[in-house]
Image 1: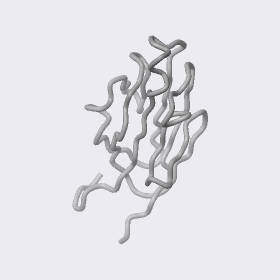
Image 2 (image 1 turned 30 degrees about the vertical axis):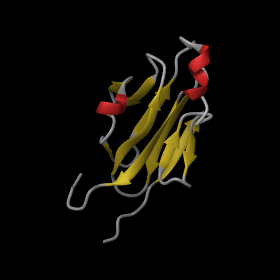
Image 3 (image 1 turned 180 degrees about the vertical axis):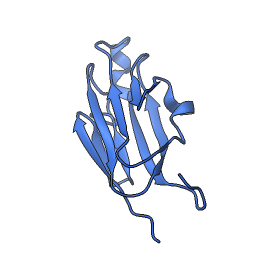
Length: 121
């Protein structure tokens, strides 16, 4: 059977970027996000997906929670994570910036891709 494509459901400040694939991005991406931005993202419907981190420039301490795991430096750990239908990704940014001059280049984009052929979740 053909794989079914899920859709992102988002509450909070993040955004969906369907024009570049099944991607979600930090608020104001590709510009910097703001202190205290947060959102919850879920893939609704469809098959399990593998997360691909396409961009990750964030302040220390800002990051994701997936189930009970926290990812503040997720490029190595979050990249390749497989999530199933309705798994929540929770993004939180801290209350301040370490360097306001760098805030304009900060942000993230994560895409959900089909599992490689033959890989079963």
